[in-house]
Each structure stands twice: as C-alpha cells, then as structure tokens.
Length: 379
Image (cartoon, rainbow, N blue to C red; front, top):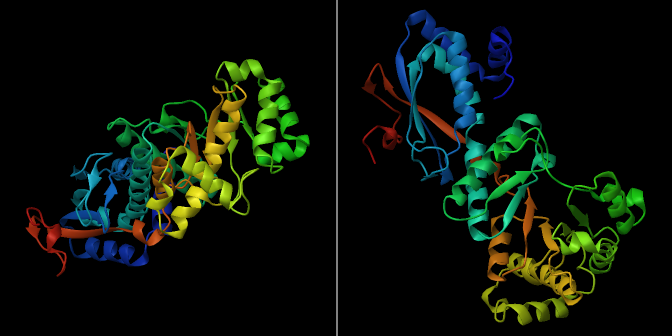
C-alpha cells in the first residue's frame, strides 16, 4: 500500500493485527529451527486476479526484514481464475512468512472478487462508460483503496475485450488507478437542497466551475423530466455542445416522474418489444419496469430529451448498478451514456475469504488432507 509506516511501526502494526497463533508459530519456528516453505493462495470461487496491492505490501515487508521471498504468480493481474485454483505461490523463510498470512489474505480476497464483479458489469454493457463511486460504501481508507484498485483491474480486463470499462472515479485519492490526477463528479443531493431548486443548483455550479461539463442530478424534487428539461433550456449552448448530462438517481420508493407500472410496461414494449417476456424474477422485473432507476425510466428520460431537441444531452445512471442490473439494462438496450456505481463491492463477504496453505516444507511436498489439489502438478 502507499505511505507505509517506517520499519519499527510496520513491525508493530503486523504484530498487532496478525492472529496470535501465527505469532506463536513464528516464535516456535525461531526456537526449533527455520524452514523454507511454499504457500499456495487461492479463493473458493471464480475471481479475476488482483494481487498487486498484496504483492507490493509483501515486497515492502521482505525488504524491511532483509529476507528473500519468491513469488510465482500463476494468474497475472486481470486474468480469470477458477475456484480453488492457486493465484500464486509464495516461497521463503517460515519464520518471516508465518505472521504475514492474516494480512496477506486481507489484501487479496476482496479485491479479486470485486475485480470479477467490475469485469462482468463492464462486459454486460460494453458500450457504456463506468465511473467508480465506491468510497462512500467502504469501511475506511484501506477498503477504499482495495475496491478502487479492483474496479480498475476488472475494467481494464473488460477493455481488453472491447468494452469501455471504468474511465474514472469520484475522488482524488484513488484516481491514479484510472490514469487521472483527480476524481470526477458535479453535485450531490445536498447542494440541490441548499440551492432550493435543481435549476438554481445547476446555475451555481456553472458559475463556480464554468469550464467544467455540467451533470445535473434531477430526482431531488421528484421531477426528473421537468427539472432536467428546465436546466437544458437554461444552458442550451452546453446542451448542444454535448457538455451536459442529466443524472438519474431515483430511489426505489417511487417511480420516475410521469411513470407508473402500466406506463413503464408501455415504454419498454415501445422500445424493446418482447423484453418483458424474457424476465420472470421479481428483481429482474423491478430493474426493467419497477420503481427507481429502471430501464423504463431511462428510456422515458431519453424520449423526453429527444422530443424537444436535446439529443446531445447525455444520461448518467446510478443506484444499484450491480451485475444483475447491468444485465437487464443490456437486454432492454437502455440508452445510458455513463453509469456511476460502487456495486462491484461484494454482496456476500464470505465469498471474499482467501485461503493460504503451505504445500511444501524444505522442498518436500506436504499439505493437509483434502487440499492435495494445491500441490504443484496436481489437478
């Protein structure tokens, strides 16, 4: 990780945060004689390999301790990894590696699962650009770093297959993962409440940042279409130049302005005939024609903009855009230009648990019963 503490503080941090039984193992090994061991590190579900932050930390610790640690990366960053397939083997002094296991696993598992989620999302909607907005959902700075890195890895893997992927994020600290110096974004709901109207918030933003593109959040007063068009009419030059977007973030407690169940079905039938009949689950139908930012809501907003000549105004969509919602949007051909999301963060944290098992002691293969598949050359 960036900005690691100096050696004494680093060692103190390791001692405080690793599991006690690993510290006791270290002490026993130091007393009875060191061994050269090889760890296999894997996850129990398919993932995309995202080991860089873990490896950077491991290399820093090895340098501080003056010990050599060998890493055989079986799946390079951004590649798919099957369940139970070792992502890497780590070989070195047991006395130096024993107390690192807890922290190594913390820095690997969640990043690999989040990278897999981001990769899938981008492939479902390859023509749409994604903006990472995970920071507000993270439990502190280290998780934020892991999730931002993971989204960039998954997005880059999708780019290799022709998708636009993740093009940026919402804050400065992790913008470098997307090749930028700073994050992007315009306004939260709080600014609109302060301004007293959506239009006034847009005016305040433009007066303060006249050279920035304008993306206006339209759901505060429940008038996504009315307020979105009002801002477009106020800034016709920006609208005509393609420097303007409306952001839909309608919460799941209501429909977008002007929609209800019947009209939502009608919108989808008009634009993607038959799409309704492809879906049976409640969550899929909600993404398609339900409350919140549904496919019907996005099509309704696009229709409203186009009908009055604002065809160059883009639509930014946010609110729960995980893998399943992206899949529904792809089937409905929802006219989205950019998606802002932090929903690549794993839903089931138990799936993020990485595991490390020693598979060789002083070159002799040995692993606990049931994990023989980790031995080199085994399948």
